[in-house]
Amino acid sequence: MNNVASFFKQPTNFVLSAVQKAQYPNIAFPEIAFIGRSNVGKSSLINALFAKKIALTSNTPGKTRQVNFFNHADKLMVVDLPGYGYAKVSKKEAGEISQLVSNYLTSRTNLKQLFILIDNTLGVKDIDLEMLEYMTAIKERIIIVFTKKDKKVKETSADTEKLKSYYENFTISSKNNEGIFEVQKVIYNLL
Image 1 (cartoon, rainbow, N blue to C red):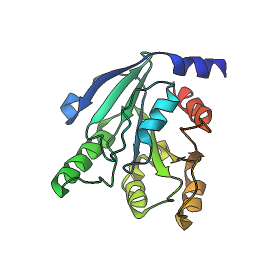
Image 2: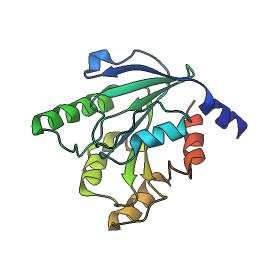
Image 3: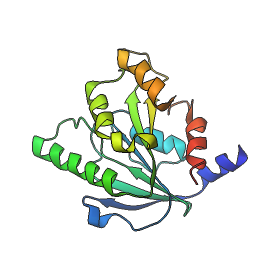
């Protein structure tokens, strides 16, 4: 336990924001990435996992429009991907963001784990299922994280239990850190 906790307290530094594949850093560290619908709590989860504010949180959904790379302790690359279901963006811009995510997912050979975030209060949406179906080629590297466990469930989905039986998953709260250590252990074991 002490090794895990001390690992996540080490420095995490912003490397770069990429809008095309040619800009991705050429670093051989194991890589983890986070993706989810806009306003799912992605930045809050990243900040809770690494016990510091590295990803920008916002009250405006869909703020992340690039692939953001962070170097953690010269041992792990952390990637913050743009959200899907892009609130308040044009169809053209949504297409560009979708292509950016697709390029990332199909080109990063050192991607060890992809965390797909789903809002626990709203349940699984069609767009989440579409995203999971699109990613079947890397399904063995997918873990689902249900966020906002501390909030009241507004909607439920029959697909939630199906996904929980098919994918490794965690239900967490970035606000009170419930479930955070379990996700940290998974990440630590990738090193």
